[in-house]
Length: 352
Length: 259
Figure 1: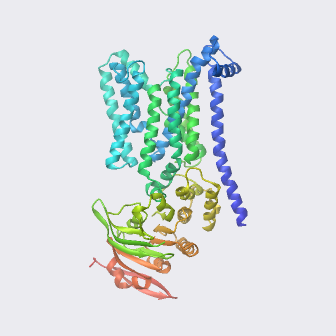
Figure 2: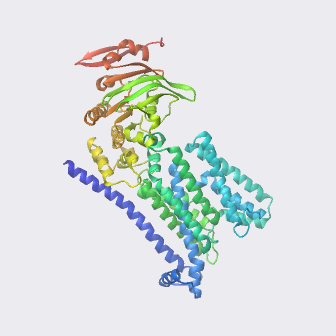
Figure 3: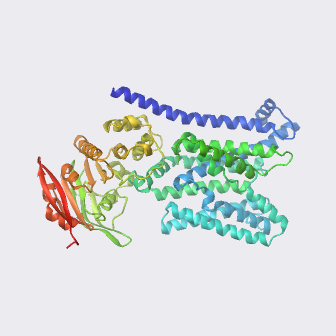
């Protein structure tokens, strides 16, 4: 009886893991399919099969015809940026929720978004960035967005890094940075205020091939680092700090490490796109409801799902009021909000 | 594994919790730590497991100071079962027990780790609840799962902080029997902080009695659990009854004040 019981249990466990892997495969396929469809949509009609053959052709040679140029130079950078940005935001959101043991926590809670907003606003309004040239706004936003991270780091050094301190310090900085931004806007020209405001809503309209490698490399490095820490985050999340220590994990050190990697990733994305909200909060939660909280599977799942979600939202943003293109941040909130509420109501058991 | 605690002192923000604690603990014995609330039982366990760092004194494991062990090495030698069962983040029993393999994993968990988890679950007779949600289990089952997690660490010392609190009498006995079986079969040492003096006298080889951070007495149950000792440490008048070669402490009246 014992051995058959054990075999049954083992099979049950394998099915349980299988379901998670299935979800990961499903989201990867979803990204590829949606990317194909998304590339056909727009004011210039191109069929799905044409799109795929153009993409394959342009991978090896330069685009020649108008069609090729539209797909490759206009639509593809935007699609790829949407996938990378969504993936990066979702993965840093998932890990931040884990280390802070708080369902509302995201890198934005740690003050990154408002600091980036201030950096961008300064660059736009005063036109004085730390970098000169066309990346003034990007560079300024990036540098500013790292400030809250280093303040929290300094605080952790002297006062310890409990989740509560980190969140409270983050919220405090959020208020400080938004207040400074408001003062700046108050005295600025209306045109500059408008463009600073739109920067903060978040938009993928600035997608160009030349920015893709930077963001992609940052995603690749940070994702690998985060993936490496999934065991420790599992332990800290499920068992708490004390038991984590008894299992050989140093919770303070891991918390700082994961925070740094997530903050860097978020900063490098939002300095190009503006603060796209909600993906980093909602994508991990949706995945948690579907496949559970084990980070070894949850992190890759959230990353892929975040990419798919932002791509879908951006496709809608481009097409729903065409030829007007809505900022994607608006669509993520309008679409993600109700979707999240629906899942919250439908879920069968507690997942957080 | 032999543990020697020498002149240990610990304080939380200058409020002393342990004062000059000196105890020797030997291989494959069950040591119960008893004492009133706030007498330093949990703090002592946490110091042994290096969760807290004592300000003074030393803890030697087989002659080597705990300070010279890395957290991972400690985790491989000592399993810790925390006090009380807090609301957990939702996780299956399997996931909770798998955490116990963390000290041995680089990143991937191998078939061997999974087998070890299944073996521990089988040892504690809880393999039928593997895929259940931890939070949906009864208190007794949860306690067993937490012990299973500590055992998955393959420790030589097991630290248990009030493992019978909030359990019904059957589960109290089951959990204590389980600890005794593990200690005997695996030859490991168990240090158990416990409030129930009757359970302590029944299962412990030796009892450490603590009062306000100091060791009051260390000896076998018969010599520690005397009416005079209990009166001095707890401020309660008791009668100790012997029945079928077992000792029972029956509380009579609380005294007005200590000393």
